[in-house]
Image (cartoon, rainbow, N blue to C red; front, side, top):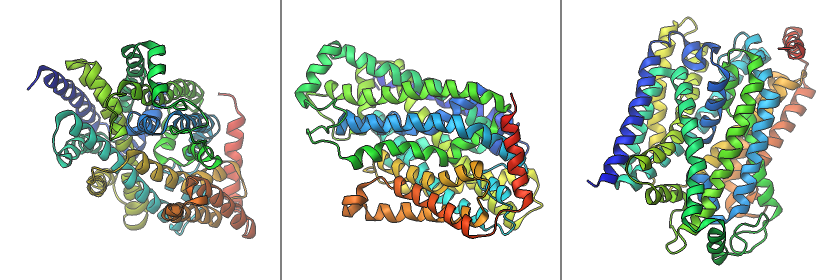
Length: 500
C-alpha cells in the first residue's frame, strides 16, 4: 500500500474512532425517550446551530452541489444556494423560537407528529399516523442518499466494490446512532460541521492557486464555455428558463418542513439562545454553500484536460490530487462528516416516528422509557436496511435523490408547520388535508416529470402551495378549533411577546 493510501486510512480510522467514542459515551446518558430523541431539551446554542446546519447538508454539500455546478455551470447551482440561504434565515428567524415554545406548551411534544397531534387535539391518532407514514417514506429515501454518497466515496478512494463501500459507510453510522441517540448525533454534528466548513472553504481556494490564480482559472473556464459563470445561462450558452430559476430558488421552501432540522429548534436549552444560534448558522451556511458551488466551478478548470464522467466526484478528485497522506484523509473525512451528520439525524427522526408515534401511541401506551429507547434503536436498524437496499445502484445521483426527498418533506410538512404556528383557525382536518395533498402531489408530479413542460417545475412548488390551499380551504369549511386549542395558541403568542 502506498504511503498516501495509508495516510488516508489512518485519518479515517481516527475519525471513525472519534465518532464511535461519542456514541458510546452518550449511550449511558439516554435514559428516557426524551433524552434519546430530543436530548432532554438541554443543548446549547453552538451545538444546536452547527448540528442543524450539518444535519441539513449531507453528502449533497460536498458532492451533489459541486457536481451540479461542474455539470451545468454556475447559474443553476447559484440559484439553488441562494434559495437555501434565504430559506435557512426565514426558518431560524420566524419558526425556530415559536416551535420551541409551542412544542413545550403542547404537552411537551417530542416529535413533529407528536406536535401535530397535541397542537390540534387529535384523539383519533389519524393525523399522527399519516404524518409518521410520510416521514418514514421520505426519510428512508433521504437516508439512502447518504449511503450512496458513502459508497461513491469509498469506491473512489480505496477502489473497493461499491456494495462493500456502502456497507462500510453505513455500518459506522448505524452503530453510533444506535448507541447514543440525539446527544451523540448533535455532538458529532457539531464536530462534523466544523470539519465540513473548513474543507468547503479550503479546497476551492487551493484549487484556484493550483490553476494559476484567479486569472488562470478564469481563462481555463472561459475556454470550456464563455457562459460557464453566467447567472442566467447554462454551460452550453442556453438561457435559463423561468421554470429553472423558480425551481432552484424554491429549494428554500423545504426548510419549513424538515423534521430533522426542526427538532434542533425544539431541543435548545433556552428559547432566547436561538437568535445567537441563528447568527452562527447563517455564517456557516452562506460560506459553505457558495464555497461548494465555487468548488464545482474551479473544478472544471482543474480537470480541463480530462473532464470527469461522474461530476459528483469532483471534490474527491481535487483532494486526492492536491493533498497528500494524512491531510488528504482529513479533507475526505469532511465528506464522511457531511454524510453521517444528515443520515444519522434522519434515522433518528424516522425511528422516533416508529417508537413514539406508532408503538407507544397505538399499541403500548404504558411502555416504559427503557422499552421505547430500545424500540427506537431497533427501528434504526430496520430503516437502515431498507435505505441500504435503495442505495445499491452505483449509478444513482445524490442530487436527484436528495431533491426528491427534500421536495416531499417540504411539501408535506412545511405548510402545516407554518399554519400550526401562525394561523389560529387551522383545524385537524385542515392539517390532515395539507399533509396528504403535499405528499401525494410530490409523488404524482415526480412521476409526470418525464413529460416535460410545466412538469419540469421542481415538485416542491406545486406540492407546497397546493398543500397550503388545502389547509386553508378545509379549515375554513369545517368547525373552528376548540377553546382549549385556541387557548394554547394564545399562550404561545403571549410568550413570544415576552423579552428573553
